[in-house]
Length: 383
Image (cartoon, rainbow, N blue to C red; front, side, top):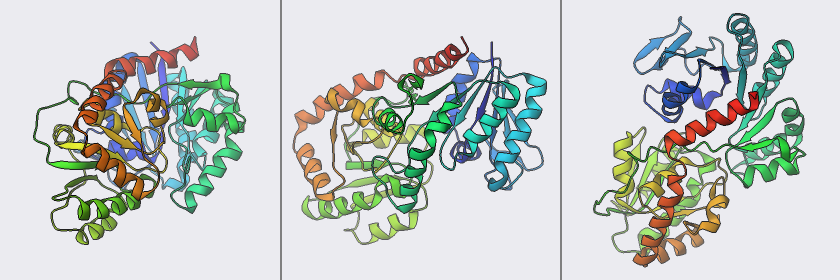
């Protein structure tokens, strides 16, 4: 079995540091079975890093599942590129890695560091692009800058890697090809790993007309969502919405809720256990995903697995699903969201049809098979 090195970013580090079994941890729980050893190098999240009640600030390596070694930088984020080059060169002298995966995003320090490491060690590497910030639509000026940086730099960045992994079939490959990346260097490996024994339809009373689940960040279109909810709460008798998430816009969300009719929005702030997430989804008539840009998102497929119809902007995986009639596309426009929510709430038969079509899509992302596919395709690069 091969030895894999993974260079990841702050998002995955925060996932592991949360002390709860979130997406990256759940992936590793199955993924580790396909490798002799996995070493993960990630940036520091806090001075005190916690994984499942395991606190360490001086100890900088943690072992999970017997063969997954997590190496956390002791340095501030700005010095992380120096740390991971130093750390990986030191590890490789002892371990001799067969392959390296690199989660890439602006400002590209992961990709540049991986290129340096590859030149010195000859380890082949795969760039993984899960999300193009600001594409197809930017939430703010920072995302405009990041989108342009991706467009200008990605051709050079990818040229040094064996291949580049994308997690949707249309949106990201289209961007990369326009930026000059050769089509034969792009491989599609989805990053949706859905446990269908957990995420499934349950016969529960529908308490919420719409539900939103996601990080409370600008790219999630929280502003659009609340514009729509404001109209819906005043035009639909006893309208109820559920919002689940955490992030920098938490105060914005609370402030907006206070301006709405009392009881019209229930806010679950922070981490929600899987079993509760399944319950909340099954208690909802429609999932609304209002993002300006995405890689997936995962919650859309989780909702489909629970038999919940989806209204979503045309981002991430949504163009891949559009011709399967399992979702309805909404524009970045509050009035459009309102009209499509109303139409779907008034059409029970259409919601049932979408639920059936969505479940068929969700089956394609069954956790064990999807993770095996990921591991197999990585090993094919070695072959």
